[in-house]
Amino acid sequence: MPSDSESSSNSASDDESTSSSSVTKQTETKPLEKEEAEGESVISNKTFSELGINEELCSACTALGWTNATAIQSKSLPLTLAGRDVIGLAETGSGKTGSFALPILQNLMANPQRLYACVLAPTRELAFQIHEVFQGLGQHVGAKSICVVGGVDMMSQAIALANKPHIIVATPGRLVDHLENTKGFNLRQLKYLVMDEADRMLSMDFEEELNKILAEIPDSTSGRRTMLFSATMTSKVEKLQRASLSDPVRVEVSTKFQTPEKLLQQYLFIPAKYKDCYLSYIMNEFSGQSMLVFASTCNNAQRLTLLLRNLGFQAVCLHGQMSQPKRLGALTKFKSGSRDILICTDVASRGLDIPSVDIVINFDLPSNGKDYIHRVGRTARAGRSGRAIAMVTQYDVEVYQRLEVLLGTKLPAFEAEESTVLVFLERVSEAQRLATREMKELMASSSNHKNGKKRGKHSDDGEEGKMRGEARSSYSGGSSGKGGGYHNQRGGGNAKKKHKQKR
Ligand code: AMP
Image 1 (cartoon, protein in one colour):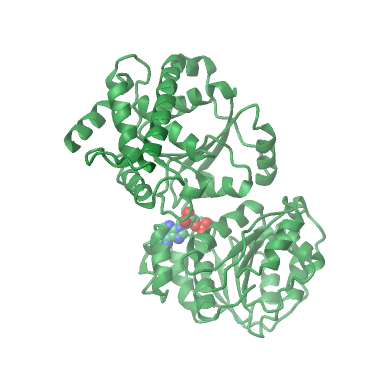
Image 2: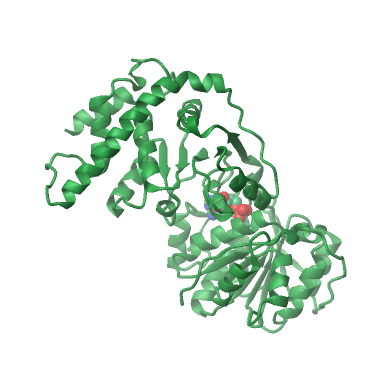
């Protein structure tokens, strides 16, 4: 499929109410064929292949960790793949995004076309989440999705729209803005319309916007397929259904992963000079849980890895300056559980099958909300609870405030008593000094390497091995107990044993 541009953006007006005129576009409707609720577990016993999903998309599902279909997916996929309009009575957490993303992508592969599908969601946050799923699945089949929500300037979105992505995920207010004001943009060839959380969209008074969008796209009886998802069937949703769907089948499930409520997002406001110390404190507090730490640069990712290892933590690094085999090696260690802390940059983490983690830590805040959503989406997956902590220093206040505006909510604080945190300052300072020295040595050794001086055969696996080797030979603290400090941390002694065996 043809390539195109990056996504983005948004307007504050999206979440604001407008008028509540009725949905006017009527189509002939027959009584609904109703599928009964399954009422059992979230995951069904059907594989995606059994449900008719093609090989490429089955691999894409596997890469996301989806092996079997969820109940809503298993019930709706055969219908949507056969070209039926569907009303899905299912909540967020049921896997409903996959149930509309997969048939759209599969049919798009068979009939490639720009501006193929449009997904409407009531909030920016949900739109970003849906866009992430389309990106995750779509990257395997060359499909491009963009997210058009309130809060970002119209111009950058207009440019992204001019590149004609295959899929647009949007909040209704901003999409109408573009339909009315962006020259050359229209949805007259649209093949799929999805209205997600329709009950919420209607209770947020998006009825007028929905009317306008329905008036601008092909009729439901003339080749446009429509899927409507809602947690409840209100009279307003029924009216919308009559206006926008053609001969729909109703699919209902009561099962869901409890995703959104289980994600606890917090911020931690701290002085920049103690940032490393606070990170070490958090690592110690949540010792034993899997953690993903985001740094803004390769250098910082590497420095933090060295720092934490010097403190005895089982950290592994993933950044853009590492070769692909090294990245995969690092990921394998993390996946296997032999390392429970993964420190990475946004670029390095993209497109990799990083497993869901217990905690995401934004050590360096991302400069845009899209990256933030992408990062926190790595925790609280598939029904598990999760936590995301944003570390905010005096220099990040503006970026953080923009993030809160985008999220449309104020996050609670992560409580950490400074006097408790600073007990570790001395040890962290020493680990910092060591990490700085190790960084210098790494740089020197990599320039030696470039100049043709190869490392010995037994020099372990390049930077990774060098980092570990340095850490073990020059630091006697860590979890061995010397020097006091982190009571929970694991691994110093074990790590030593493992390295010895390796040699
Ligand atoms: P949704 O209801 O679409 O927001 O999905 C809720 C969560 O379930 C998301 O974290 C998805 O990644 C995850 N999910 C969706 N489909 C599956 C599946 N077939 N197997 C495992 N997890 C899934």
